[in-house]
Image (cartoon, rainbow, N blue to C red; front, side, top):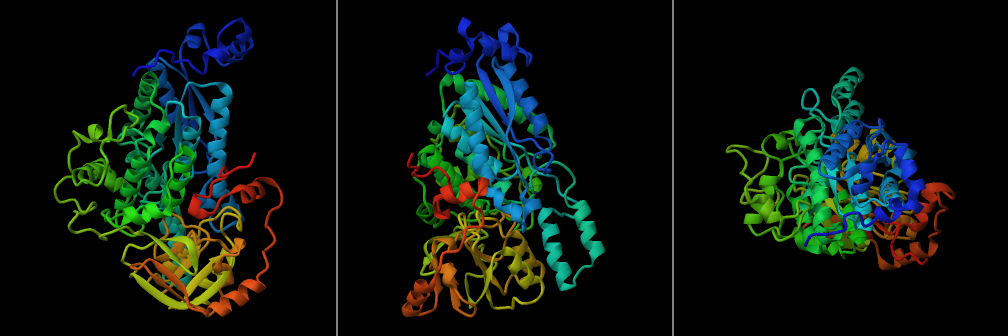
Length: 561
């Protein structure tokens, strides 16, 4: 059904004698009389020079603006923030990473709501940008869509950002020297774009396309490419079509659509952060999604993509054979996806995929259903007396499906890094990094440096790591994050001592702390809640408001206002 009033939000603010001051303000920015007759489309740009993921997005925003204007709207570019996990990992600054997702959502909501835009395009690059943008769109529920900024090209010698992190561990082991580390540092990132494996950025971009909130193909384009420019131009036309059809984000982001996104995330071997972010996005869209849904869906969906960090290939190589559209077509034909879900094209997922051609013969990146990397999900939800409300493991099977050993406990990431690099951590141990949850960190920082150091030192097969923090999409090995309740809230992970036996069983989905109930009770009785690390500012507000990781670590859950 078409919509008659395309200026539902902008007209009351910019039309009439009484609104002459508003028009005068916009005339100063270049508006002409004709512009005030067009629907206003806000274009949320995450451009910044703080990271290669976003350094080109100003140009993409201008392309989207041109697309909007050509389709009969009036594009208005505004900025929101981005941060770089790749720079801040392992530092105090990393605590701001997850917080940035909430700031992005808040700022998009604030600008569009305040300035009365009729539709929205949001463009993201680094990994928190994407869920932040979708959450902003869901809150506003005005016709809109997401554009992915695109992936980076491979570095020399098939290197990428994770190559640099793992080089640090290789240096600590004595396998490479400082000059070799510097060379990898210099060549791994050749220009604009998000990290090149199926890390969190590409994982979330793929999930958002499967969700129906970006145009077909948007998730599988290089940042510097004609395809990405065309994607931005088409987005301008698409948002005007959504406006005319009165299709809003919550019409698209249904439970079935989120299940499609989960299934594609699993098939691609995507990031554990996808669990956290999809739950948060669903909450904002008014859709009930939980760890139980990931567990249920994961039993029937195989891992098919041989991509980094656990596999061999980079995103640019997947793009070269057709991206994720042929994979989705295969999954649809196999009955794994709901093709009736509406998308930002105004068509269903099945309609979008109707003419998609299969991958070229002989490609080895996307494996067939009868020869998968893993027959079921690599995203394993673990429960037990160490994680009563759930934890999320990333286990492809290459690391094994069972691990047991004595705990090696660290209060925070920095101590763990020293313990790994200096040889304190031994083969057969379970490294426990705690006090880094959403409230305890605060901010639930990623443990990329410790996991990369473990891999770099050759301990990936002989050491497990569990934490109430989270992981980068580039983390791999026998790693378990999002352990809930977190240590700061008195969760069992906060009571573990060095030498306690811990077992992790990916097949039975259990994580067990092998001490007596009496001993657990005694430790609970002796536990004292830690003092908060921040009492003022943004991190303190996040710690006060955030939910647990099992609920997406969102800041607007059950607010009593």
